[in-house]
Length: 425
Image 1 (cartoon, rainbow, N blue to C red):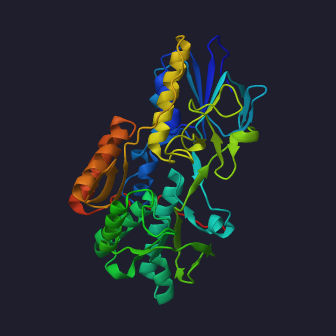
Image 2 (image 1 turned 30 degrees about the vertical axis):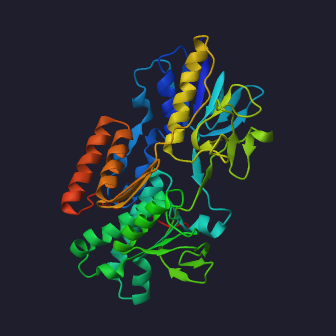
Image 3 (image 1 turned 90 degrees about the horizontal axis):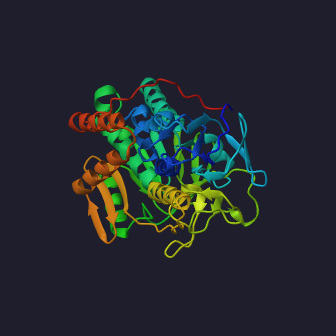
């Protein structure tokens, strides 16, 4: 693995997401050897994956090389590999490129798509959790529209232009809104033989309202925005099966579609090796105390989506979104520095900065404590926050330029089929 042994304590971090990056930023100047493992060589700003999927942004606008973030730290090492097993008794990890010993282990492996055991959905639907997933959706969307422009078969054309999304959380709502805006801004100019009404966007949600985690006021406003854009929202609707052609639901209603996107849930991306009460199997996440220490283990910590920290107001752990991950990483990093300098650790206290979702141009909803915003003001807040948390000055500038261009021209410039998508048979 080519990592030298030194006298410095070695901290191994699994995952270069929000939690892992936030933690490393706190300790990078301290006397530690830092080793980061990730299956990709880049950090992904996941809240904007839907814009890559719908041709609003290129993937390099929301991704940033992990090595570049910490390039000035001589004690930082990055290895692109899959961590396969943790051996707590020997304090080692097994990876796809070999084994490595650790003094402290930080698990920040995040989450993965939850298909709730439904094999047909897992095999046939389109998840949207990574950059490759988003590029697959972009390619499939554009390929299907191109094919619809060629075919004279009415049923096939309808299926190709029918887009169905399961899950009306922030991801599903934002994706549905972006697809609706795509048909309004692009079809008329690029595909004159396809009418706007032919492209249908359906959003399926098992709960009785969209954006269930947000306030009822924001949910109601988001539903209004979606319907105004032409999105057909189906509440109290659960997906039973998808065979690659037809989505079957609990109500008996079927949707014939060549594009079915699954945004209905996530589960922890746990790693083999930690047993007992540490792993909460129903959520596939690790139980941690107020210092993010994994229950039953010393020198092993879990951060962000992979961690369940029960506290007042959060009996099932904090929401699996960016802010808890960032704040937990920052707090644990500060605690490592406190211990290094002979001080005691401070427990984690989550500061809820609010929730938000954008539905489209000048259409967004924001909840900040007891305040609710919607429309242009909420949309502006959403844009500012997302630009602020993007990693890298270049990414912020390119994204801002793209958003400005799209706003003025009602256009999505990244509608390129660079890597055609082919379904597995």
